[in-house]
Image 1 (cartoon, each protein chain N blue to C red):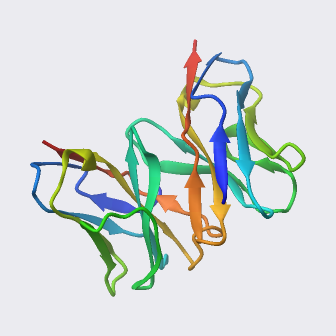
Image 2 (cartoon, chains in turn cyan, green):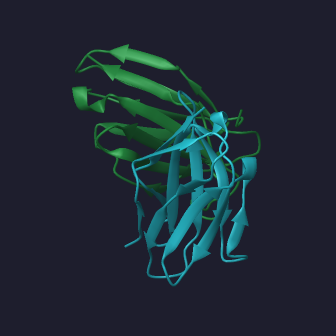
Image 3 (spheres, rainbow over the protein chains, first blue to last red):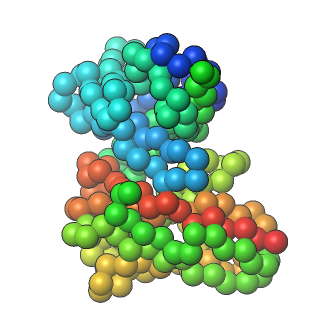
Length: 113
Length: 115
């Protein structure tokens, strides 16, 4: 069965420093992977998605993620955090057998001035 | 703004009651998905409709039901409500029939509080 594990429930960074949100996946086939962001009292917004093209995926707002099959990872990075990046981030894996998305438990990113 | 609208924004009701949540997908999208987000269960997929037909079912309780109407809006009906049903309910929409290859656009959610 498909699954996704977000390794950190909370990450705190200072404004202007790099962001790393970690995600490992489990899949019996080459999956599609997504990162969604949820700002307080808002719906989820797609940051980026990987669908077996380039392994380095660029998303919105300066975020990118690298698909590493050997490590079964899809970590989200940003070179320089901004205060507006404070939000909950979800790593998501596709399950083609059931045609559903499987969401991770989320990582809350705090950005300090 | 994703283009997906959900009403109402907040709903407070009592145990045993029945409520209806409404979702209008983005213009041109044929699929509607319902999710439940709670502190203990996280984000759980409930059900997916494509062009009026049920496409996939997730962890949806028998007390819950949904439908998609000819104008493509969808309603999620929750009955015999329990305290544990308190959660944020999201609707998402996508263009095609696939729940995993098409990008899903999420609405702002309906926060349900059961007292």
